[in-house]
Length: 182
Image (cartoon, rainbow, N blue to C red):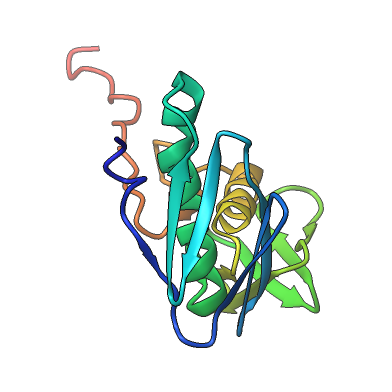
């Protein structure tokens, strides 16, 4: 039995979980998320507690059991609290700005980068060098953060680029100076 899969999911107040056939719908103050269940698992709702149960003991059912439980748990947390990722921009002249649902990045290229934020993601910029991404879908928040980081990943010599706030960049020594006797 999956240790993660057998854990119950507690539904927070203000969150509604509905089962429609093979689809789990979770609604809350931060939005609505859907997940299509695989045939190997089923969901049982008992008041404010949800359990994921596998239908048989096949290899796929065992592997999907814990995954399904974690995804539904993340959906419940996302619509109640939400998820956030922080990015930092390091470099002279590098900055960010938000206009509507467009993130404008100046990262040392000849033209600024205008990144359209997907539906369900909100971005705020602090001090032009700190970006905070918020949303209900954990996977989408992480994907958007990775796409923004990919525009200018941090380089190891000066550390310039877009990095996660909790990321540590291993720095390399630059070119060594010529020897004294040369």
